[in-house]
Image 1 (cartoon, helix red, strand yellow):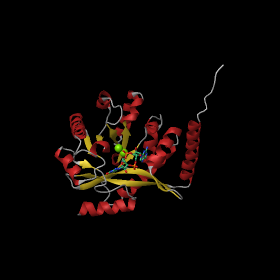
Image 2 (cartoon, helix red, strand yellow):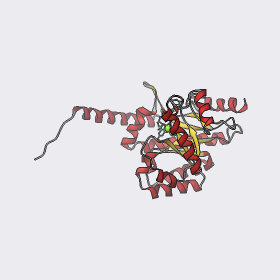
Image 3 (tube, helix red, strand yellow):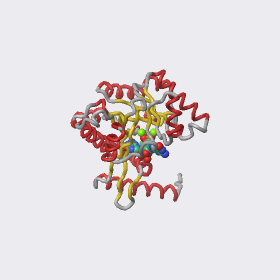
Image 4 (cartoon, helix red, strand yellow):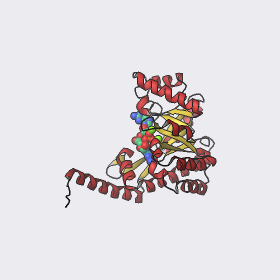
Length: 274
Ligand code: C2E
Ligand code: MG
Ligand code: MG
């Protein structure tokens, strides 16, 4: 006394997802993933102060695959845990290389963490194990979290963040203002920085709402004692607008897309000495 509906579209999507999952697993096994690095600039220092690590998949046939094509599948299927672990290890390896050279010694590296990764009971131990094993200075590592972590028990989130923070690991809230943020949670999380989302930066000069939201994020960060950084800065005019409105850190195509480590290091040498 029941019936099943067969939806061919659903079925097709499930199959596509299963296939993609298999391919991501293969990609991991074949070492096809890469980290690219996008510089973060502090305008007042006139320096590149760090980078955000962004994953890429160098696929033998498909070429360079963007994260939008595989991160959602990885998140749905739980494979993000393995992928995230790889990202963390790779990022920490990069930090140890940078630590060994005077021109890169000061750089921090931000790693994106999915809610699913962060919600794991063992997340804190896993991060600290990698940091410890590779001998990374914990204050060089930043974790970018999104508002979606707040679906979890807030006490637990605070406890995890506090433990990592006590070791020096920094936290930035990515995509801020695009999800269901609760300002009362925000106040309680031991964050270091808010990120102005690129969807607000894009039309910051032409859309008065986006301009108002950006200013509000800057003000909110200021009154909560947090730093603020803008992402997706593509033009000099956007950068100037942000500076006028007291946001002095930024990242975006105006300086550079995410690029391989060697190119990034060259950019740091040129920019920070020029
Ligand atoms: P996100 O963390 O918000 O990263 C910012 C995205 O904006 C990146 O896209 C970056 O390449 C892009 N971007 C930077 N500057 C500009 C600009 O000036 N203009 C425009 N139009 N775009 C800009 P990407 O690399 O495709 O990454 C997309 C998203 O995928 C990331 O958003 C993040 O949520 C996720 N992601 C990337 N790498 C990882 C990772 O290692 N782990 C996890 N969990 N997620 C990742
Ligand atoms: Mg990010
Ligand atoms: Mg973002």
